[in-house]
Length: 291
Image (tube, rainbow, N blue to C red; front, side):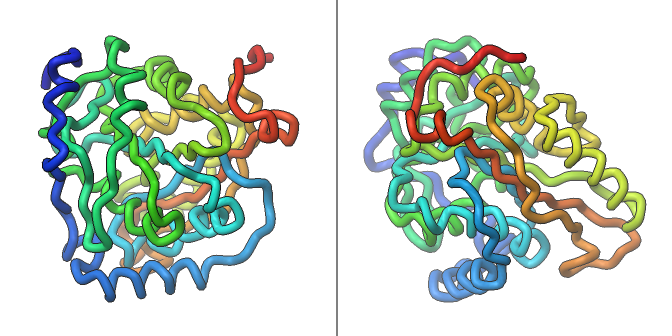
């Protein structure tokens, strides 16, 4: 791990790709099988009309566990997919100790569905922030970002990616990064997080409902025991509150509802955050004052 510098940015090699770390474990490693599975989850997701989302909160377990919930969020993109050119994707760093937010130096992330190019120009816009570090090591084993890519590839086709592995950091620091990347309707923000871990089914339902109520109120108060992606989600919630976004719950369940037993479960939620009509049509701009 090292602080960002222009020399680090310059080392991004057009030939260097991050290979999949969890293909064949969290999702199928054969392209046809993976595409069919993603399409099946999307087809089964309820078609709920609503405004085009500026941001999504999605889970990141294996597809058999959290795929149905993730699909409920991604299905909302169908009507606005054609205008999305960039995805800012942030999730917790599970396997590498990290302070701040890590950006890789590679040129692309690979999945069985193909390569997703990184938006190096967007990455340069956050390079000077002290909480941003360069670390391929933080990204190499990380699943919280990788499992989102097949859904995005299926729905968006070609898009540019800004992947952020989030370690120990504050909501304010995450929100400051998002401020520089916010953009307009061409930019989608996706925060990856599961909810409670290891609770019995009924206790998990109660705990996760409380966590979701905080997210719906845009309160950046989640703790790691409530959500493994508390840091990235809190940062998104703070940035969303500054801009007057509205949060909507699309799905809430746990592994006991999908493919696991109910003795110890993991919670999953899908939320969409949308801009008010006047803001959404105007694109990017200075955020309104927090009330």
